[in-house]
Each structure stands twice: as C-alpha cells, then as structure tokens.
Length: 143
Image 1 (spheres, one colour):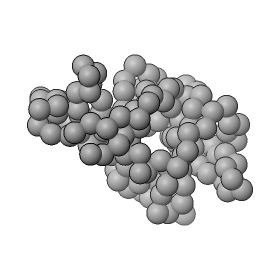
Image 2 (image 1 turned 135 degrees about the vertical axis):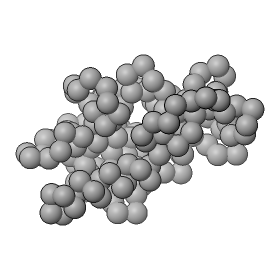
Image 3 (image 1 turned 60 degrees about the horizontal axis):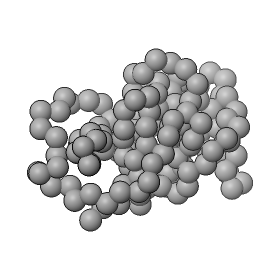
Image 4 (image 1 turned 30 degrees about the horizontal axis):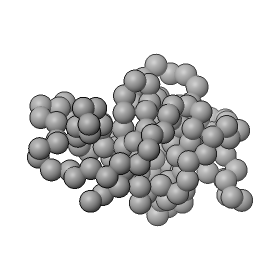
C-alpha cells in the first residue's frame, strides 16, 4: 500500500507519493529569480542549500498569484525542488485499485491518475512530467 501526501492548490486536491517528500515547510521567505520562467517563484535557503520553488498554481493553469504558504520539498535525483501549495493534509494510504479510481476523468497535464478517497476526488501528481518540464525550461534558457 502506497502512502500519499494530499495537498490543495486552489480548490483542487492533489497527492504525491510520500517517498518523494523530504519535508513540508511553512512561512519560508522565497527570494525571486530575476528572468526566471513564470512557474519558478524563486528559491529558498533550505538546510544550507538553495532550492528552487515552483508556483504550482501557475503551472496548473490557475489564476496567477502568490504561491501558497506551504512548501513541499521533494527528494529529487537532480537536486531538491519545492512546490508552493495552499494546504497540506494528513498522510493517506489508499489501495489504488479499479474500485477507487475515478472513471471518465479528463486527461490533464501533470496528473498521473485520479482516485476517490473517502468521497473526495484526488489527482495523483505526475512528478516525472514536472521533471521533464523543468529540464526543458533549463535547456531553453541555457542551463
């Protein structure tokens, strides 16, 4: 059974595999990157490292605005990255099987699957697609 960390961006609920999460931090000062793509909100100092912060609301096509007050710092093979989210919920351990998968969900970017957890639709966030997008952005901008 896979453990997931649910979080909200706007009114939608998403989840990440807990094994991909290093830490959730709050009220961290995000320092802007001049000339960075719109989805890069800036960076934080995190345990002696500079960690880029992704504005998930911007990435997912919500109305552009400030990043959420909570940051989910991910463990990543190319270095850590933080996701700005509005709210983080308690860890869940759903059995992802056909009975709780949502039927007829629309194909959307950055969504790997959609499940029904206790009556709530939760979109499983696709970290591989996010990683590909970040690599593409870095390549376009010369590193």
